[in-house]
Length: 90
Image (cartoon, rainbow, N blue to C red; front, side, top):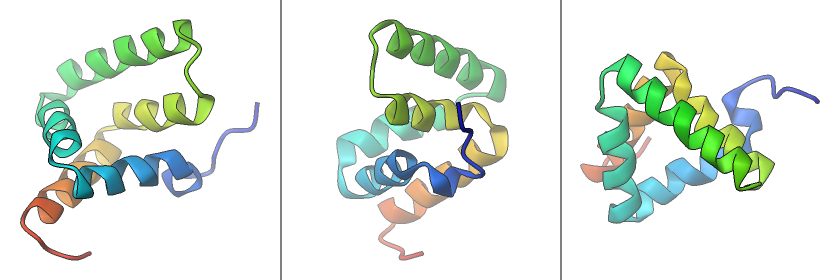
């Protein structure tokens, strides 16, 4: 299995963040997840990824969700979503 070199290589992750900027429902759900303490967020993301694998979800979507295990990625995603909610452009 080829591992992406960076989050930017996972198109679904970029799409997910874009959807969070465009859709208040997606934004709210991701924001709630990303506001959790790191260990709590990681546990929830791990369980979500496990459920997605069992459900045979598309691999790129599973990879996109798994990115949120990384504290730095989660923090940056939160910043992007927060700026989108305030109407700022990146």
